[in-house]
Image (cartoon, rainbow, N blue to C red; front, side):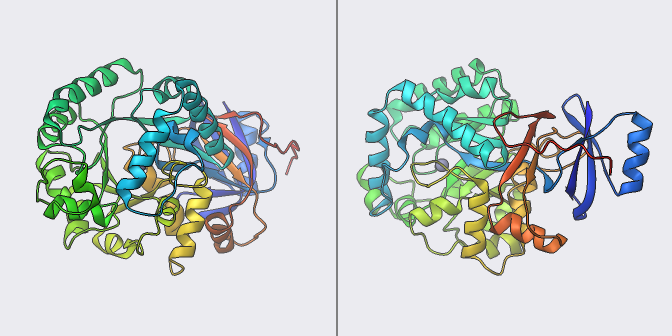
Length: 410
Ligand SMILES: [Zn+2]
């Protein structure tokens, strides 16, 4: 329980507002009160002195809608040059050379890096059953997706499906699944995962339309991926996802760099989300991300860091800044929304994280900003990677971060 005060608060509707208090009970946000007189009345009514964090803007924690913390140990080892299939090959070789203890250490380090940059919620994909141990104990909000693939090999399908069923049953967190991608999941496996998702109303995330090579393979059975995979479906990936019953409001599709005509509209109609990963986009030197097509279609958009196998940091501040650089015409408020509310919806955690909303987890971040105008503050938050000087998870101030100590009686 308590009141947390700061120089500015980022109100869900009004944006940055000077002098605000967030009232927290049992780890949840109860209300946000702004202005000196209303705050004084609240303080008097409760007879409780706020924890005053002082200078900076108090925000909801950032939401990273796509990560693979299990790959943190591969930091700096892979190159994005050459075919996508070659990168996948490098990834598998490097990963096979890592001890489980190194990978588990990487998960911990990755989570710390997220917190240090103000990220308090993450969509983590586990493919090695290493991050569930961390996720089950983490005070962060974790949406844990269990990855599943068979690389189009029918002899692997049943085992893959049983494996994901076992993992889903074994973790303490609410179940969620990640059919890896249309090029690595057979029709049979898609059908099995579709049934599993439907039975449990599970959140789903799927890599989709990331590379031109993916399209070449799926549609024509050609290109570098064809050398490693079985016969091509000769169908668009989105059709395969949709027919398996995996395209719905609990679905987030990741990357979507090369949508075909009409596909953004299909995402919007299904209520599905699209997660863009600016750091990975830059790593592979992709063509300009078609953000405007998704926006015009009305698709819910989110941001993710992906992993350090294809990015230089696990920092949502950097993802926002990269997106601003790549698409200078974007409104800072829209970019902020992608990194907060949009991410929450993509993870099927709307109302739980991503806003200073009554009932949401009290996962709060104080960012230091130099600006003194609301518009300029949003610009700074999304373009300048402002320092994090305090952070709470479920209302608890986290140690190891600098903390303002003054408790003035403004
Ligand atoms: Zn990924």
